[in-house]
Image (cartoon, helix red, strand yellow):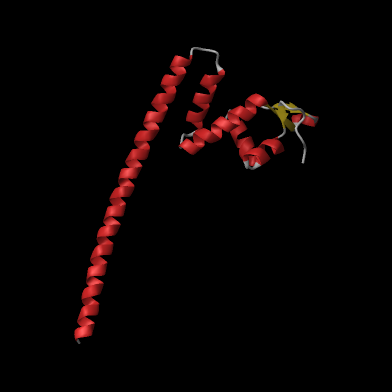
Length: 139
């Protein structure tokens, strides 16, 4: 496996190993516009990732863990790449997080309702089983 070219550049294998990803996943993030490696070698076959690409990959994976879509992740990461005022960036981030939190809360409410229903059915089934076993003992 190839080693990093220097302390500030990385190969696709370096990043895959560091973040426990497949090289295919990294190429997918590149196709989504999240990473923009330089190309070298014959026909530009070799990808050279910068420290910026590494940071963007780290932020992408963090956004995924939060449950954000790759499109949302790219929007947020692109905003931090621009040298503009951070106020709009933070407002956008808060909007995305609020929307995502609402979705998670709705999913949690649905799961809680399902759990309550399962508990009810379990209770009813146990009561029926107890009656059946009680009737068998009497017979």
